[in-house]
Image (cartoon, rainbow, N blue to C red; front, side, top):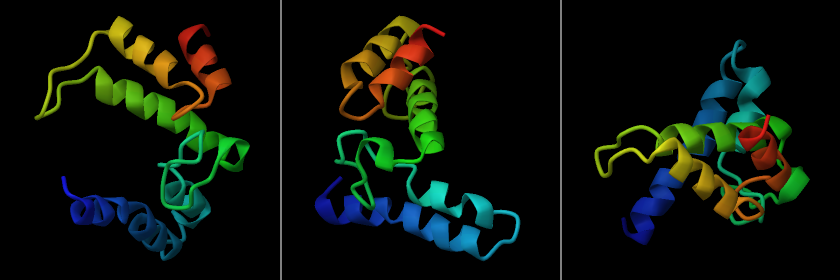
Length: 108
């Protein structure tokens, strides 16, 4: 994926946000849709939020979504084992993911 394709793909947060704002049923979660690809270290998108600037719901969803993506087959790669996916979550705790929530996810 080149830079132009990446920027286009990243627009989905803003597009989803606008769609949600137009729907009375989805408007209450529009802010969460906008912020669901932010990273704990501030390197996510579209706003570059960092740490607890990110809504708790988005921090939880990021971990659950990543785990689901890693443990299921994708067209471009086979699924990881549960153990490998948990190791990847640990590796990215503090950068992509809230480290406290990763610990809770791994050790409920």
